[in-house]
View 1 (cartoon, rainbow, N blue to C red):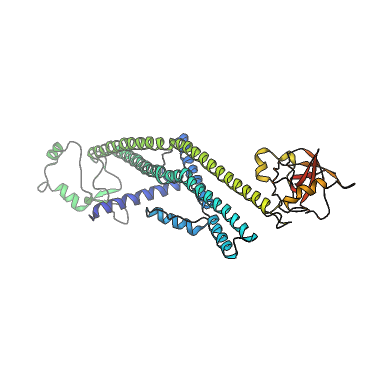
View 2 (cartoon, helix red, strand yellow):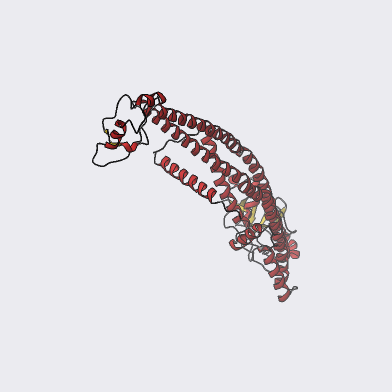
Length: 450
């Protein structure tokens, strides 16, 4: 590696100078070039976009992969540019355990058959979850990461360059200000040939040198060669103070004024160059910041894709679980009376707050126990059953219900039916009558009227 000590020292000096200047600006001891209000709004908008994008990205990763160890593993694979190994989802792992349990406990037993059916449903749920994670990662997480690792890094780099250009511009302004002040001060100091400063006297050696014409040229000749005035070295001058200090290298004369004029011209030239660099960098940074709007449009499109994939995933889950519920209700209800598929909701929402969109999400689980007899015998028994003399009630149907077999009565939301119970019947079911039709109906789908 080529190690350049001079360049390192120069960079360190520039860094230290800018650090001092930045600190002075923070304490109000140095002037600072302010950006316009529109530019400041663009900067604030960009910072807000970056912060919220990071938060949304992290929380979406938690949603898709709740296991922090797995997230760290995936992150390391990404950084190493290696393919992430396929991972079994929780649903697929549960399906595997249920299938193995059914094989060991007996696939022909009622418990084993139910385990196999639930295992198949869980396997389908795990596959749907895998598809959702894959789709969400490609359509939502990847664009957000690309923005943070690509566009935002470019914006941050240009903002740092703009900050350095601003510090250089402010340094040039301060340098020009000092040069003009020194020039103005030099202009007000009289020439030595006109007025000698009152706080200085010539030393003995200087007086001897001036009086000794044999060791110095005639003053008339010297003045002809130097029409601008006298210029004496400072070691001939002693201040009339207790402590002797050296003055400037020479007194301010027309030559010094010319020197300060040159210094002011040089400072103005550097200021113009610094202003040009600052304006160019500000324009580049402004264009990048205005591109945040395009990033918002892209993120909006990705957000729609994420919602679409999530909707598809939950719709698949609902369909799989509804199929499983029907399978268990039709085949296992007679074997295990009084049991439930899933967890029933103790109370249903009012009809006024139920919409077609939310009905599927809030629909109660159908109890699977049969009230009187197995399904094949229930149809015959129900036709022979007469309603009791007392104990019938009116009920309003809250949700649509599709009959699983001929012993059940199909229901339509918001219709009124007559219901009653029979001795020995499962308390989660009632006998419902609508005109000439009768059948079992689940209690959770009804609102009993007084």
